[in-house]
Length: 411
Image (tube, rainbow, N blue to C red; front, side, top):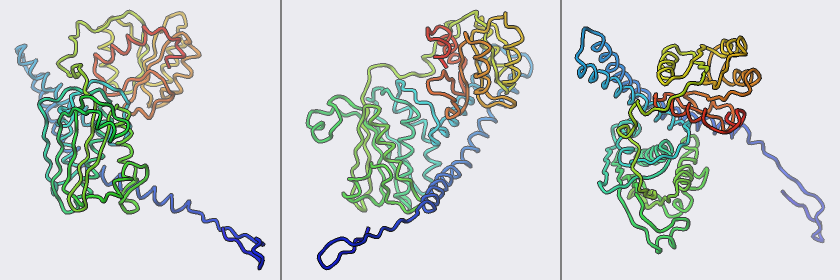
């Protein structure tokens, strides 16, 4: 604002100028999205290659298992191959959802070494051929408790930053170690408590940063990249995730000498969850309630019917919401204890179905299913993320049926 004064110093007029920056902001958002899509595009070829390999294994083992009479041990081996390939495909899908920040936040006990090793293939796709990737893991590492998808997101954000800091190639090292922090560390780093930590270090040989840049590196929207080359949210997101997980993140860098990020995550005594610790099928919970299952994909619907019926449930099935509404309303005297429904379906989706179903069956509970958590229609709703394993399905169904909340509260 400009002010105009008379000879005595009194304000006689003011002039303001307003600049409309809406178009510029829109262009910045479009360029940022374009940058992200370029990174996704870089992944696409590699992901397609990996999926084709996995599908080859699945189809090949299935063909072998369907030919002639097989010995029990041979059949188990073929089925094991199918299961291993399918689980790897599930991991690829989950990592892509993590990259797009569309994952459900579920803190669990994790093996940090295994998590980093599992990401190896995707990280190599991200950094390109001119960057050498070294992964060094510590044998003394304990477990951590955090959301797997969020920790993967932190790693991928740091790796993308490191890649961009090495435009002419270089070396990227991801290392795990342990460290005992004392009172001195808490004085130097506010917000972190003394104790035993697992440390994840991501180091690059890139252009490095000045002290001035390091002072602002974790601030939202702060970026040293040009317009369209970064949103300024990557490192602030890392900071938020690590802090939310009870940890701490530091940066050490010198111009021309590379950068090293250290992430401190509290150790826990519990054992990490692995497939080998899952209970056998005989210990899965059972029931005798009636479930209305609504799923438009016949293969998925058939599998879920098999799983739930094998545990004693009475299953009514529909391929879309409109069909499910007809079933729910055609026999009002027949009980329906639970609606288990996909969200995205033809004719009528899960959200509209749930609204109509509550009117017809107010006493029943509802569980939504989807491969995209962003589709969840309401906060606090019971949810199963696809793809899901049979044991997770039956345990979640039993948990919701046994919950004491009123049906409207469980959705």
